[in-house]
Image (cartoon, rainbow over all chains, first blue to last red; front, side):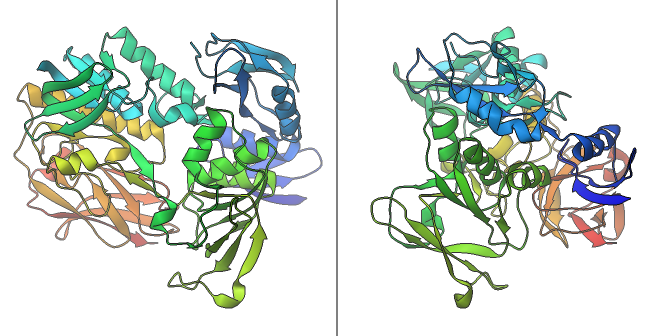
Length: 116
Length: 414
């Protein structure tokens, strides 16, 4: 059995979690809520992160549209998402929730700011 | 002279939430003044997520959180004067502002101050060395990268482990820069734990505690910094000095409530919070002038800014309706382990009152107590407490009734 200590990042409370990892099971202690348990299990098996970034707006000066992955992506794919975003531009107007790029590392990229 | 019931100075999260709360409490004649072209304040450059978990039950980015409140403002027909800079607020509630149309004067029945805060700059730190390009406050770099699309640097050292510094460590890494180190002069980080995990550990960025930047090198562009460990009096230890080559230094060394208007109005300021002294309705010592959000105390979570602003908005409406109570006048004081307590005065003793505070340093398991002399009014236990996280204690109305004051909030280590 392997023990892994971590700090929960689901909310600002930041619970200190301990995960006991055996071959087919992860048991979690120290969590104040169910989301914390879920987080610890995911961190041990398949860690994911929401990537937030920006893309250029082609028809506005000095203007970036902020975007995020609509769902979290695998932690080791974060830089792949950034690489894909560097290559694209969007055209204003942009609305919050508009999909600016489909299926990047399993997530669509959506706008998080209105550009009028 | 224009006339409005409530004039709100600042259209960030505090100003918007105060406006909405006041409108919903029955005051329909509300105006928000903001110097920027759009509402949202600092949230517009905070493109990372983690906003709204407490208040809205969803995890949003800064611009999305701002959009939720902007929509509420628009639905309610609250007047917004954008690109309008307030130049003075007087104790008799005349607000002077200027914009492209000229100078405007507004007589308000109540004023809500929601100007937010600004960053402490290099000048406040007295770091030796030259003055090359490449030294930014973290929030300025954040605006340049996130809103304007500039790459501010490629090899970065960050001084200060406050939340903006940590967030920028991740942001610069995403944008292809190498963050060499985050240095923190204190023996602990001032940022939220989740930011240390998500922004530093995920990118293998080292955090050096009890360490500071002692010299800045470079003539035109920053070439490197000398860092050193500090002793318990925060003095650099000479034989720990070490040179790190870098082209960018970001300073995340504290936020200062932007209270120039407040001071000029003659409103008393708390020397610890650098915000106005207020009662439980966020009313300053100048009747009819309220303060909320980062101009009152620097918050770690926007959710709490919105909640505080709602109290200010309701307070302003009560003031206009002459239904603000003035009977208590109970002072609050920080005791052992507590740096400050807000509100500094409690006036209403017929309702439960929430007290907000920060601890002086990180603690393990603690018990907070609110006491009037030897009488305990409220207690609350926490598994841990840190200066980076604001604490809230509620005192019941029954407990307040026979209080003479001042009441003290202190902690005991368990």
